[in-house]
Image (cartoon, rainbow, N blue to C red; front, side, top):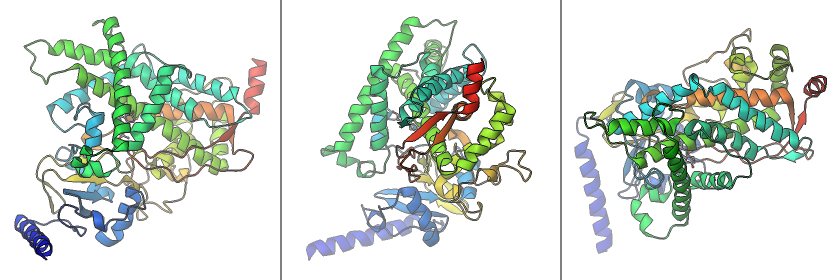
Length: 502
Ligand code: PLO
């Protein structure tokens, strides 16, 4: 009886407290919620979060609120509100919520992907951005670098020609080496121990990070034994050891007059900031490691996943693959390998990449944003500290913007005459937008184009003899992964003949 009375009283006080705070302000429609547990008892955990939030649109509208345990949170399902959050009021919403799992990965909010908005984040982000320009011109030309890895990738695929293979490791190696060159000017072989360790820990981090697991909602849960958290901690320790090793090597080689990679650029910035006249946020080894760790992790996991999604969709749609190859044969032939400037020529390949990024966005809920000041979305008040989930899945599958959004149709990114690439509507931003837009977008797009162009020029990709097509369901998480699949790779006749006559 006493229990019942106490709980009823607490619930009543909670609602009165909420109502008082909201006088004169307009709040978003909110899912039902209870004290402490928030809306969790009313939520369905069968569907992946991005699909569930898309379904809730019917009931609560495009933008609605819910309580993730004690945390007031907002879901944005439509591009116009998303643009307001990411671009128009981008600064207000440019922070990140602190979560137990991302704190473990980022050494308590260091680096650039998961850190809060502020001068420190801005400085590291600028440093990373200017390092990317090292790639655009300079000795380590981006194109040369990617083509070198595309060449190794094609050789490995050719070595297992005719057999049934899962291309995941070879593709992962290729994208890892591009980003490894950018970060540390080094690369791995397929059988290097460090490469295997990296592939393993990276996979385990993806399985456990930012999954809206209970520990990210109720941090006190970490006080109890937790298998996933232990796996994440062990994986992050392995990652940090690997990064530290790279940092020590780079420190020994470091020459301030020759900045060749991201780590060099950060070490140089650290030296410059040791000057007491320069008033900038402090640059420490730990911050450097976490920043490189973010870029490295993002470069490794995202590109290789998208290349595999592209291959999977092409196995489902062989006619699209044929169209791409026809265009490669006409515009490039077999006399030379593809280069970046072919991008304006290979419209079918480019439109396919765009469509894959639409239908299977790399991060269907982006990384959660957080309002670091009191602000608003439209006429609705958004208090400081609100978590914002931008539902890219819903935005990219919005039936009012996309005709048959569930259908794979690369031609939607071509004009009527099919001779020009277009973005058919504004409900599309696979790399995010605004202050937190992906810093590696240029690198990612270049890699996707070159890896796929090299593969499709040389090989026919076929479904294994048992006819099993890849699953297009995916595994949700901070990166929307593809379920491993197998395929048969065959050298194309034209390529073989060209090789013989060379
Ligand atoms: C991938 C696993 C790595 O071991 C660690 C890592 C660092 C940065 C993360 C990345 C992971 C996943 C993709 C992320 C990236 C930062 C930006 C990128 C989340 C977890 C995206 C898609 O937003």
